Length: 228
Ligand SMILES: Nc1ncnc2c1ncn2[C@@H]1O[C@H](COP(=O)(O)OP(=O)(O)O)[C@@H](O)[C@H]1O
Ligand SMILES: Nc1ccn([C@H]2C[C@H](O)[C@@H](COP(=O)(O)OP(=O)(O)O)O2)c(=O)n1
Image (cartoon, rainbow, N blue to C red; front, side, top):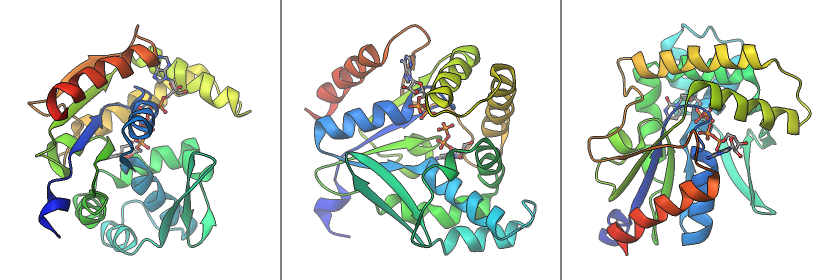
């Protein structure tokens, strides 16, 4: 890796499901002309590949092997990023609730996390990277100059996810979504390997009652302070 690439600035956005990480990361990357890493998509693609191959979600060695050998690509068209697995567009499939739940399970396996670590770091390139996930600021890019930890109440996050799924024509119950969110929060925060937690030097932003533009402005303030 060249010196210049090593120094490309990274903005990390971590937080629980539905806190707005993906939305803010995309707006920020567009505004700054930075590359974008949706690290959750890597865990989701690992989970989908495992489900497709009928792999037991307790078989850690096979899951790590799948994570280490994922045949994936990210393609950008009409300002939307699609995820391809084995050449097939699976952008919708990886957002299904059963894949979300499986992703949270495979993400708790240290060997899976290790297998995906370098792939995530390889996204770092000039002029900079916006990386969203759970451990971007703590484990993957600990030297990032800007770290945000975005949160919101579980009820608000479930409501946002409900509206998002309704908008896509997917019918779900708000109560089930809230239960799923709580189960995933619990697993993501309490696992031993890179648990969901703010980095010591992260700005913690509670977006429960701040709209998307309000959050973006706060994040941009910090970006301008730290990296100009
Ligand atoms: N501050 C906010 N206020 C209201 N809705 C929001 C806010 N941030 C995000 N959303 C909406 O909530 C949903 C989930 O956001 P998303 O960015 O996918 O969250 P995450 O990536 O953290 O899971 C999206 O429909 C998004 O438009
Ligand atoms: N850096 C990351 C990113 C995601 N994960 C795990 C935790 C989540 O339950 C799944 C899916 O993450 P994703 O960010 O796509 O999920 P949400 O959009 O926030 O619902 O992967 C992780 O452990 N570490």
